[in-house]
Length: 360
Image (cartoon, rainbow, N blue to C red; front, side, top):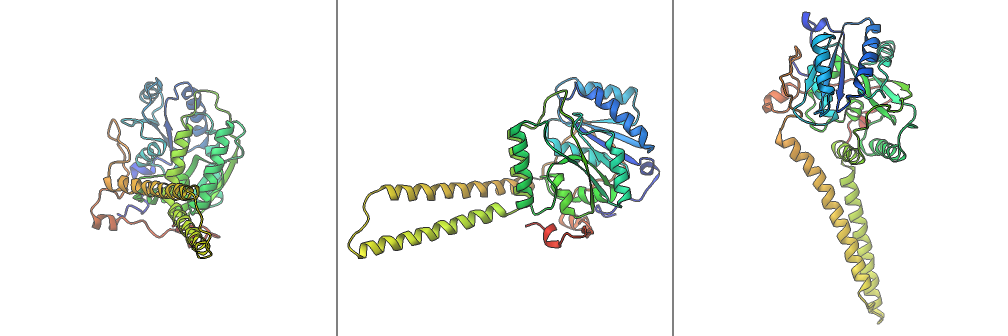
């Protein structure tokens, strides 16, 4: 069976209609209230569900609390422990690999993604016949000024350089169908920015706006440095625009240099040569800065290539993940195997051209 194809239902998979992925990192204070709200919301959907809690290297007591919950009082819940802190996207990938449901929801455990909206996202997806239902924050009034500005800059850069059409403030809170999850898992990328990968796939997406509650417990795990790293990773993984920008700047500086040389020669021919070293030093500093910037951009892309070539696993779990879903990731396969698992040609959302989807 091709990795990009939807799995045929069987007795093990058809029993689960909804898989809910909850990555968490040091959320001991928020987890009890979150679990209570999530459990009530899932029971109201009337669907057979499973909940996959993915511990992304927590160091507090939240992991032990979830483990006890899974073993004693919530049989639909399961704990997946990563060997260390691999990152939010990697934790989502681990949950996606272990999921068995026809629909797959993902949300954070910080109480800023209202669990009661899962039912609304499912209903929206089915009513609009959309295999993806994405939650979008109405505003960021509860965030710090620096985080709001960083988020605005990130989404503006993603739309401008990433080659994908996505609204601002899309959250890591969504519902996707199994027919989308399988091609998504089959993608060979190691830099998995799902808020950009999903629009790139081109499936029809329905959007649900919501007001995020201020974080009442715990602290955000997305520092400015991590947000900056996410921005760089997103741009280098989805666009060659920085390379083209460096080429354009180099060409512009070269043109300015030629014009300057002509001006110097013209003055020398007229018998009034330019003297002094300030202009020379300025030119050296400008050219040196541009060269260093260009080398830095090239280094970012080389780092992406190196990470891909290394072939290391995207995540490592403390215990094997038991799942009836066959592995669908193409990395680590022989070339002939990878060709056999190539994703299917996907339907593109109406109004989005192939040029918009096939980002440079």
